[in-house]
Length: 225
Image 1: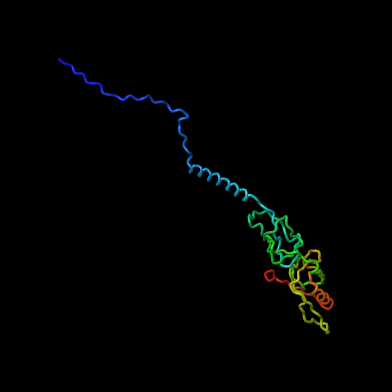
Image 2: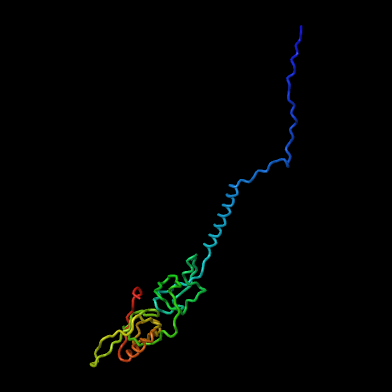
């Protein structure tokens, strides 16, 4: 009995594998999309912080404490301060740090309205004169007060002593003050002194008219001033 031996199959010898070292590891580049995402998040947080900061920032602004007609000189009783967040529009209005008292209004400003800078102008010291005129009770509107605009009429008595014809001597005149205890026309009898802001051209007509007749003041509505 003959035994056959099979030849051993040829095998390829492989070198033993080595564990990678730190120096041999490849460093992966950082994904640019990841960087863009991080930058977007940081930017959003920054913008949100700025917006919150602006939303919480308020400024002291002048508002009208009463209806202020055009053509009057602003006093303390006409204005008050409020805190408001005006953002970019604050440039249009008069802030606490800006002058407002002693300036003249160029158009009507309603009560509670922010006072725009365009509504004020400096007063020329030589442009107006303060003249006090006597006004009998019921010859002026009830509640007449500083800042109201009035037309001035003079009624001259006729030779017979009866009522004469009323003549308009000045229009759209600002009331500077009312010289009585309450500051307005009340139930007291007699006349009160009304201080009017007159131009130099109107002074002589009004003064001479008060010497020759009685004075009537007719209020000019604010929406017509």
